Length: 265
Image (cartoon, rainbow, N blue to C red; front, side):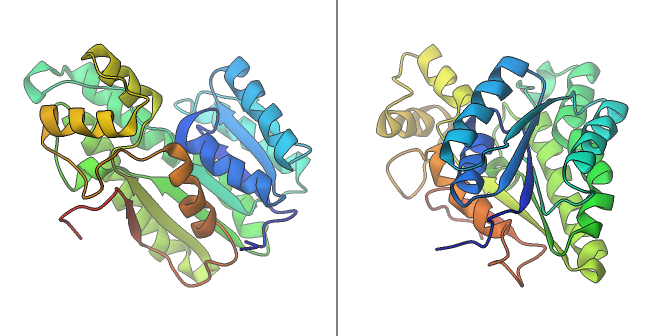
């Protein structure tokens, strides 16, 4: 399906790897102009090179710590100059790195989770809004998580931050409806991200085997999907791309589960 993205401008925050990069691949494949924002220049530059090879000839890497509001504003100002003051798509794919049970977490851990998982998204949306409002059409897609609907004891801070993302996104969908800017959330389930593959390796499981990975998730957490395997980042990208495209013209305020099947709605 042609998503109508040729020539559109798209920012993927956290697009240097994993699910963010998978979404950026879809944008590039459809001819969008893509910018990646993140903290590690080498990772971003390598990802931007992939995008140029796939159909986004002027894909650009922008280094910024999204926890730093001033740095985020500077990054979007740079992109505004590059793209004549307009932005069609903003995807926020960054999640917190904090892990640990409730009784293990310190105050600093909780603050880090909120800063990484929610406030970074707030900074990016706030900086991007003038550009989004100036565009002929605009979409925002934020990443939440499966764990907001099915808890894990080792992810209370991560999950709380992602629940903030879901709630803020719902509010944004209401606020921005008057501008016809659509705001939606994607909640991935057990996806073979670097972090999850690394965890599997740490417990003696080949994390690159999606069937073995799902079996390990079932054994350790009791959270299997209906499908007998973990998902791949490439299976998230097309969902994000549709939500971010002109083909999505009437869906806003939705939370889309991409989780291989589960017992919640």
